[in-house]
Length: 343
Image (cartoon, rainbow, N blue to C red; front, side):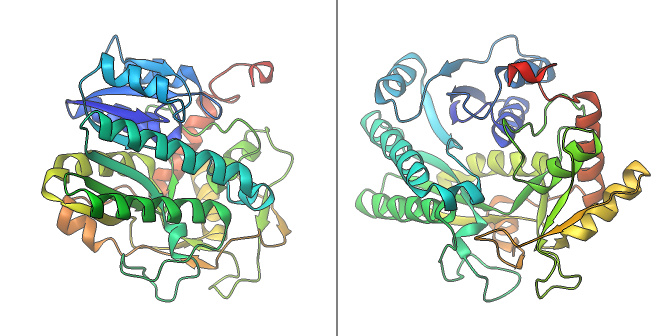
């Protein structure tokens, strides 16, 4: 089956493309490379031993480009990653996030319906739960985002629920994942943000690699066990395999099904730093900084539904996430390109 992967050159996207290849699917990628790198796809082809993976350089909001993709390939399902994703930036520039994220999804859904393609795996987020009222968080938790990025995910989920209610042909899986981390164990693909990183793991590895002048811990006064934020960190390869499991089971899931992808275990920012110290045998100094707008103190998944419906569970440990992240940084000190001139 041909699977259209929007944002397939990004961090989670390229790992998922590789997992799709390994599972026998035929991925087709559409990406405008605004926060990703063509080199990632070349490396995926090497890892998958596939000489050719179709790549369309276009914005997902471009309906003409989408129409051409569906004309050129017999697309059987779509995995939708494309969209802006930085919490802090969404707070400072909300119109950018509402305009891009929602517009692209609407364009994609219109073309899918026109082409009789009704299998849709959506890259949602634990941010749709807002300030958690219970830990771990089940899918039935009240939905209420605390930042514009989270609200774009929440609004898109509502759109998808309305769509499925209007037309029973749709099979839609909302994958609400928690905090992706790590890299492929080969060190060939990993997280390489185009600007200053927003996620903790690349903040640490780039600091250790000399790419960042300091490591800032955003908030040390949360009501948690050590004052720093607690998150459910999930290896990106486990996450990619979760998407493959969703595709394999999607025909048995009618309408819209929301599913958490997480480990069910929380780790604090300071505990992550300590794990990196053990992995690298280096002391990691950090600067205490104020909380980031839109962040919550603690966010941990209840992954039971993923176990039940997808037969999926995370298998890679926190230490493996740190080891793989550090290997990626060591083998790619400047990311996918050898010079910042290419950034």
